[in-house]
Each structure stands twice: as structure tokens, then as C-alpha cells.
Image (cartoon, rainbow over all chains, first blue to last red; front, side, top):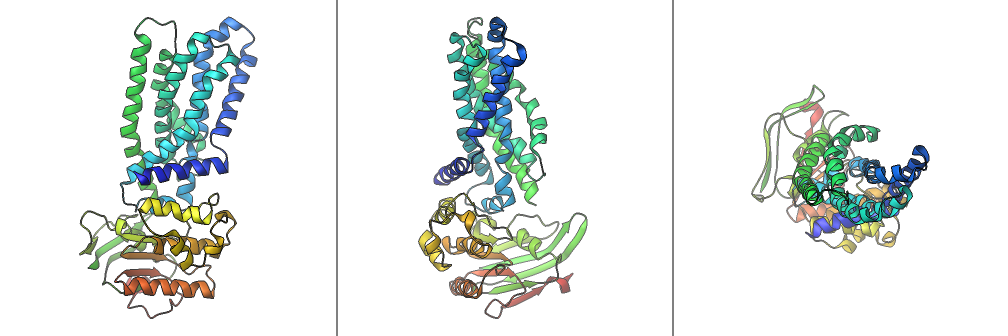
Length: 221
Length: 199
């Protein structure tokens, strides 16, 4: 447990000191959200209708932006080699690094998104459901991003490839996330969607460390 | 306790680097790996560390822990240094202490004369100082087997002497060291393995 906390603390410190974590991702998020009304036009009703979808898509893209950093540096400087020789299974290392990515990038984005919703005329009633859905969904986003980052860790400029690999996997999160963000949906639908979102996050919690560790090991060979 | 490797074969990108390689090492012994570039010195060390897989044969540590893999009982110091520039020298080692569970950071820094630089950002270290920081991990957490890949690169004379001292202590305590290097290590190796000749 100390080991997991040490890893998370180290990754958070590194993101804070080197930049490129929540700050950059938030800036990118803000840019996309600001560009949308400019591109679509100042039709308030239209903006309100597409606001949750626009925020969700901006969230997916912003999370992806920093995904390739999860393992890249540790792979290049040999830290990952040493981490395979630690006292715990390598899967735990992968899990801890995903959690660090969630805490440093996805969670701040998920919290900031509903606030930035004002820029796209998000209905006040949608703020709370959107915030809850995004916090839950962001767990799944970081875990899935970890798989993409691990699969491309040895490739130069793998950033774009991560997006191509990971975005299709984000579709379920997007669908159920959006459905859980609708304040005017039929009774029960929001709760059911939220539960499915939780299920996706839990499945990711199991699958992602296994898949990420396997992909990383094959690169270390 | 004895390290045994039987019939190891290493293939990299379709080329057989070495085949049917066997070695054994007893506690308190130092093995020096030599051989021309590309003869598989690094591959052999990574293979013993469990980072590569051998196509044939096996590596075992007789008398070692049954619950741990060989890699979990060994230290591996590679060409690159797992040193984070954004962390201080102390924080770098403190992370590895927490990761491996235990060890005295100050003692490890002292062993490689890094105490003065403790609060210094590791990103500003010279190549030799970075190497010393990577080597300090050896002292930080005791492990029975050390796998050193060109450990002397970038070290000045006094740092080399410190490495020799640290290695002597490990051997005296019944540890084992396999070092891939062409530089004299300050003491006669107990075993020499020339991979160029073996291939």
C-alpha cells in the first residue's frame, strides 16, 4: 500500500513540477469549449441542446492529450525496468500510474467541465448530473487511456496512434455518460446510465492493469 | 545459495546472439562479463533480471526465496539512469526506498558522496553524478544479486573507488555480482565469462 501511495505521489509531483498535466489539459479543454460557440453560432437554444455532448467530447479529447505521458518517460529512462523488479506485481504499478493520471488530469477536468458549461449555455439543471457522470466516467477514461499509452509506449510520436486506438473504446463511456447527464430524461434512465458507467469503470479497474502491464512487458523485452 | 543458468539462448530480431549458455555463481563471488559489442552482455543481464525471456533453458537461484522471482531478489543497473530531473536527489532515492520498502536514504547518498547534493534538482546533475545516484540504489535496499551493466561509465577515480568499496561490502556479506564491463573493477573477478568466445 505504501508502494502504491509512493508511486502516485511521485507521479503527481512530477506532473506538477514539469507541467503538462492538469494545467495544459484544462487549457486545451477551455480552448475547445470556447471554439464551439464561435463555430456553431450564437443560437442559445441550439447550444443548450448540444452542451452536454460538446463538454463530453472535449473531455475525451483533453484526457487523451496527456495519455501518452503516463508511461513514456519511465520507459525511456529505464524506471519501468526497475519497477518490474519491485516487491509487487507489475500490474499494481500500472494501476497506480493510471490512478495518478486520473488524479492529476481526468478528475480536475471532470470537476471543471460543468463550470465551463456556462460558455456553451449548459442548463443549470444539468450541472449536477453532468458533474457526477463525468467524475465516474473520468475513472474509466484514465484506465482506458492507460492501455493505449502502454501499447504505444515504445513508438516514437505514438501520441496520435493513442487517439486512434483509444477513441473507439471511449464510445460506451460517451454514450452512457451523455445519457446520465440529461436532466430531463425519463425517470430511472439517468440512474441506470450512471450505474452502467460505474460498471464500465469497475471493469476497467480490472482489465486495464492487466492489459497495460502485458503491453509494457512486451516492450521491455 | 547458488545462481544457476542452464542452456540459455538469446535471440534478438531473428539473430541468435548466444546459444546454450550456462553459468553458475556462488555467494561472495564477482563475475565479469566481457565480449565485443553486440555479443549479448546486456541481453544476458536483462535475461537474468527477468526482463527478457530466454528461448530455451532457465535461470534459478537455488536457496533463494521461493515466493519471489529472481528479478525481485536482484538489482539491475542499466545504461540509462532511472533518475527524474524534476525531483531532488533525495526525493529520487526516497521514492525508490518507498517502492522497495525500506532502506536508509542518507546512508546511500553518503556511500556515493552525494550528501551535499541532497536537495539539488537531479536534472542539474552531471552524467557521472547521475550514474552515482543510480548506483546509490544498490546500497539503499539490500538484495542478494547485483546485475551491473557498464557500472563505471562516467565515474571519476574517487567515485570508482567508492563503487569498488560498495561492491566489496556486498561480496563480503555473501552477495553476488555480475558486472558487464571491460574496465578493471578494483579486484580480480572470481569468474570471467567471455561472451565473444562463447558464441
